[in-house]
Amino acid sequence: MDFFVRTAGERDLPAVRALLVETWHDTYDPIYGRERVVEITDSWHSLDALSARLKRPHSEFVVADSGRRIGGMAFAVAGNDGKEIRLYQLYVHPECQGKGIGMALFTEIAQCFPEAREITLEVEEANSKARAFYARLGFETAERSSDCGGAGFELPALIYRRGL
Image (cartoon, rainbow, N blue to C red; front, side):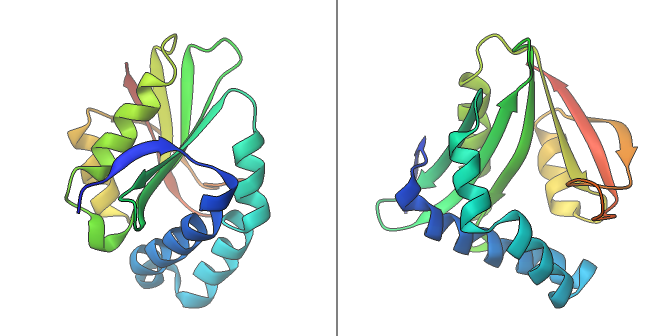
């Protein structure tokens, strides 16, 4: 199944939420447990939270669409000066991983911010698949965070950086 990357819209949000919930359970249930993943996805990936991302200034929210399903999504925000991008989300459905969708999403996000010179992101230390993916893209560990996703979540993460 071929996918193309395009800008997300409100009508995509239920499918994006379903993708995020399924991907999070596949990846993080073994790390955090099912109940904790439900708590996180209900907060971070609610339809209201996703809708707010669509409206955020200086941001891009894209999906990988086959015409029949959403196979991946990415969301990033440019810093005030436009020179740095913060990649907040890049997820590919477990059934669609390894098919170039993650690379296509990343490439689109990078191209959406032509003034940017650097991109940063957080990745859970125990998520070896994501860490390997970002290493293949040339990211390097810059620092550690004990509170990935914001205050109160207490999720350990590595902060990766890469020039553009």
